[in-house]
Image (cartoon, rainbow, N blue to C red; front, top):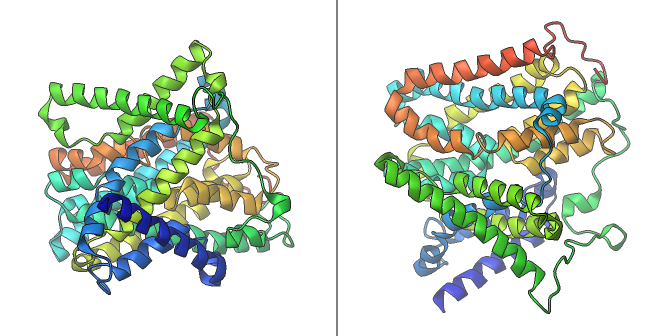
Length: 449
C-alpha cells in the first residue's frame, strides 16, 4: 500500500505542477513541462529542502526513472511506417549529417574542456564530460536511464548532474531559441514566419479550449476482447522483453556489458516488433497516438520522479565544473545554429537549424515547437526531414548506443583517444555532407535559402 500512496502523491504533485504552469507567466514563457515544475517542487519539499516528504516516499520514487525509461524507448518507433533508406537519405540526409556533427561536437568540446580545465583545476572525474550530450541531446529520460551505469563505473554523481544538465538544456532551448528566432525575424532569415502570428495562449498555458481539442487515440481492437490500451501496452512489453533478451546475450558474451543499460536495446526491440508487424500486416492494428500516450505518461512520471530524487548535495559539490561544462555546451550550440547551419543546409537553413537546436539542447518536442513558431503551417520540408533524420539518429545518439557506450569508452580508451574518435565522427559526417553537395562555404542567409 505504501507504493500506491507514493504514486498517488506523485500524481498530486503533477496536478500542482500543471496548475502552476497554467497560472505563472514565467513558466509559460519558458515552456517548462508540468513534470519538471512538479519535480523541482517535490525536490524543494524533500530531504534537501523543507523535509516534508517522508523518506519512504522518496525511496519508492527512486527506482521509477530506471524502469520507465525502457517503456519510453521501446515505444519510439512503434506505429511508425519505416520508409526506404533511399527516401530517408534523400530528404533527411543533410539533417542527419548536421545532427551528428552537432551531437558528436557536444562530446568533443566536453571532453576537451574536461581534460584541459575540469580535471586539472577541479580534480573531477573524466566521465563528467558525458553529461553534456546525455543532458542536452538525450534529456531527462536518458539521464535517468544512465544513473545505474555511472554508479557502476565509479561516478555516482553522473546521474544527478545529467538531470541538471537536461534542465539547463531545456531552458537554453526555449530562451536562446526564441532569441535566435527574434533575431531571424529582424534579419529576414525565416521563410514563412508572420511577425503577427505568435504562439497561441493555450499552448503556453497548456489548457486546450474546446474548438482546438482533439482525440488522443483511436481504438483498433474491440474492448470486448481486450482493452485497446492494454493491447498496445502488451506490444510495448514485447519490445522490452526482446531488448532484455539482447542484453542477457551481451552480458553472457562479456562481463563488460554488466553495466550496459536496457533502454537502447528496448528501442531496437521496438524496431524489430514494428518491422515484423509490417511483414505479417499486423501493424494496421497499431495506433501511433495510443503508443504516444503511453510514452507521454511514462515520460511525465519518469521526469518528476527523477528530479524529485536528485541528490542535491552531490550536485552542489560539483557546481563549479558543471557550470563550466554547461557554458561550453551553450556556446557550441549557438555557434552551430548561427554559423554551421547556414553552411550545412542546402535550403531552409534557419528552419532546419532552429529545429535541431531545440532538439539538441532540449527535447524533440521543443525542437518541433520552435519549428512551429517559424513555420506554423509546415510549408517547408523541415518537419519531414527532421522526422527521417530522427529515425536513424535516435538509435545511436541522444539516448542510443553511442550515448550508452560513451562512459565505458572514455574509461577504456582514455580521454584523448575519445576526443580523437569524436572529432573523426564529426569530420566523416561533415565530409558526407560536402560530397553530397549540401555544404556552402559562402552561404546565402536570406529567407528560403
